[in-house]
Image 1 (cartoon, rainbow, N blue to C red):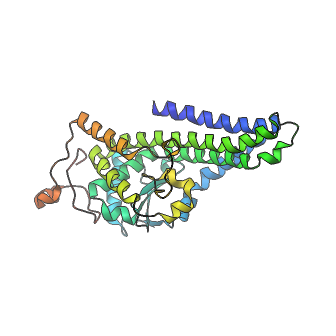
Image 2: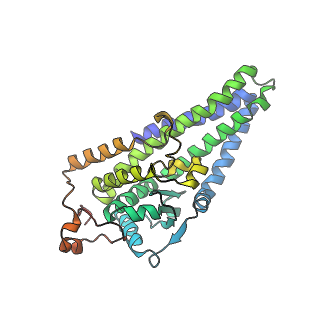
Image 3: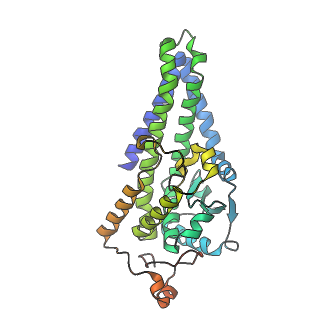
Length: 314
């Protein structure tokens, strides 16, 4: 169902883009618009991962420089039957994470220092499993294409007055002005709807990968609370990348739910708790209640807070 909805929304956005090109310049405008979209998509397909990682000043780490985080991601990758992604750490106090890359063979996951500082090992595993789910579902590619088309629509709208005088334009000046206002809003609505759909799907698949939906639920609660209080200057300066993060980093720019790139965190947490209840998975006692229990765990320590419960992946 999620894939069907995503396909329909992508088709709607593509139709919107081509339609704007046709209305602004007839058949020629439609072909030009299609050419712009194709060019931008090809460029984004090959370069978007490097661009966004450079934008956020991400530093690549390995088994030697971040052994505990590396072991967690390595274990989860094996659980998901995925190639090992590149791992990056971003110096940022706002706890957050994202995945990028054109396919599972060229993927990367990134987490902030704030995330590693406040989350327990299980919660970090839940977050990384969510990001691996995005990679497995090809969401990084889907959202790259979506963002590219949305940006192209906005670009065409900005040039609408330039095309407004064309005799191929059936809308006239008033119609052109309406396109300038409504087209970017429509594109944003569709882009946000696609992003929300993919987040729910990644939550579900991520919970399956790590083995306990409550780990991700606990992480989301902490991340949302902290993201509302801590700035992410790079994200605020580049709001087009907000959809990539596990929770919305743009707390300073509160907007209506229809335009939100992320589902309401409370709804996501409730869905994960429901999933855990259906699977008969409980929270379990805190791991710091017994040192022997901690020693038996096969989840590598990341230097975060004391861990909670052992899950089905143990």
